[in-house]
Image 1 (cartoon, rainbow over the protein chains, first blue to last red):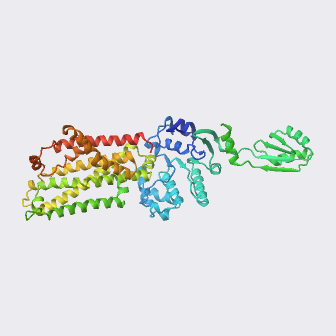
Image 2 (cartoon, each protein chain N blue to C red; image 1 turned 90 degrees about the vertical axis):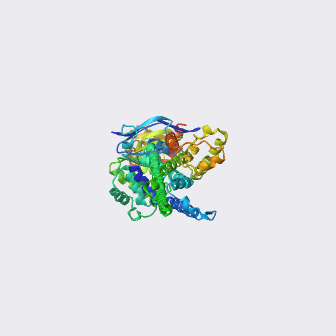
Length: 298
Length: 256
């Protein structure tokens, strides 16, 4: 796979605060890459550095294998922290300025405004927009020159549930066109629903990185009980798809390998002549997993 | 030139710009009109004051007091971009930091040209109304005063630009600019011998539009050492380059 963004040992220090500490990640083409972390974990600082507005203290990065220049910037559309526009200008006028900076034709403005559902409001001044509309205008502006990469920093911040759902749909729609998306968020749920890859940041340090399925969807836990616990344990020991199990008084907690479910356990027990009195699947909450990732490395 | 086009997109619909330009135009016109009504020894000053070509120098001198308005406008335009975070967005979207400063230099040149053009119209209107000698040499004889006014105006606004990029907040930047130009530098002049302080930025720029009748004053009091407008123009260009460079480094060395 082609590496779109390669961050190598990037660090940023603000006075006594180490905002980002030796961060190295690679974003591959076509992925939806989530940067996940609590507020103040260095997500915006990291994006600010790769977008040329914050000077790194040390380290380096490349876009498409090159140092950042006007031509690499034209292949990236970005929304950093807040939608930034002239409040006294209309949506269209603001977009004309962006079009002039990006060197694209004004004809593109209609289609992106349509994409984010603002074509009816193009003559409203930016200050008259609701937060959700401002956010959508910023996404429209990032998409104006049809970039290969879209960088979004907390795109659903401050939106109501409907607005959040709309933005997420929009992101998935854009991703389905084959664009690479880099998304910073403090919402686990958002990253899990939208992203293919994730980097977990805490205190400016990379805690975990990889495909969302391996980092965030840890295995569900199955809880079983039967009148004869000793016999159950004996059977479990022989089942190849049981990853681990742990007796807990009359209950047994177990986790399975990928592609196996509680039905397989039930069947195996039944075949061994054991009737389960209880079979429960407990989904591990994302928050619990997240806290685990963060705690693990303290 | 694309940069100028982008700036015009921002400025033309901005009411503050028009209000400040209108203030400049109205105040300057009123000032000129009112001075013509002053009578000295039963004779209206108007007639002699407007006589070309000497009127160009008087006009440039009077207009030089309004440089403060243009400087405040430049500070507002730049600090706005910090407040709206649009400088940051423009760098993300593709401009370099050098482009950001260059764009404001274009704005400054456009404002100075607007002011100078307005002075030209005012000068021709009042001048032709009151001058008896209407030969070309009389009308355009000392028109170089307008050129010096243009250079001065650019100089003031470039310094204002530096304050705006450095301080970022409009109120503080305006206070800082006024404090430097009106209080700090004059205090320094006070401490320094004239041979030295005549090279300081405010004094150099001031020498571009010398006070009319300065020669008369010099006969009464000790003549003060001032630079010729031509030398002052050259030094002002050096200061403009310096303020420009410093503005660039302020942007380059800081996070946006």
